[in-house]
Length: 118
Image 1 (spheres, rainbow, N blue to C red):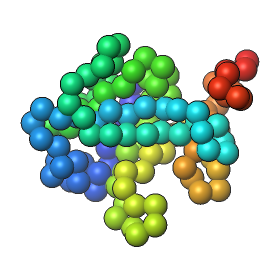
Image 2 (cartoon, rainbow, N blue to C red; image 1 turned 60 degrees about the vertical axis):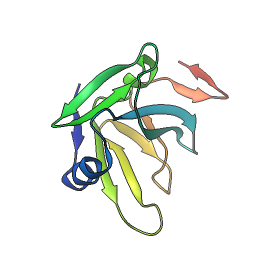
Image 3 (cartoon, rainbow, N blue to C red; image 1 turned 90 degrees about the vertical axis):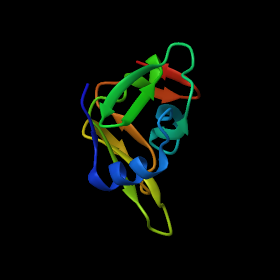
């Protein structure tokens, strides 16, 4: 599992995260390309979640379904007025939408209507 947290994202997260908090990253159906990453600062893991990456005091937590889409993930941060916040890209991305908010990955089934189609 290879996840990269860029310097700007690490700096922001190190100022925001308390000692008992982590970043929960998930993948959900959405956007014009099929899938979107979402994230939240949380404490208290849900059933089935695991720490999938540690970098210093930053912990990234994901559920088993989202974990399939995490290898190659790059987390960056933008303080731009429009589309500011954590930014997610993946080296394995096959396609993205025009705004860059959703993606599909090469070698994975296509998500249509909430169902994965091979």
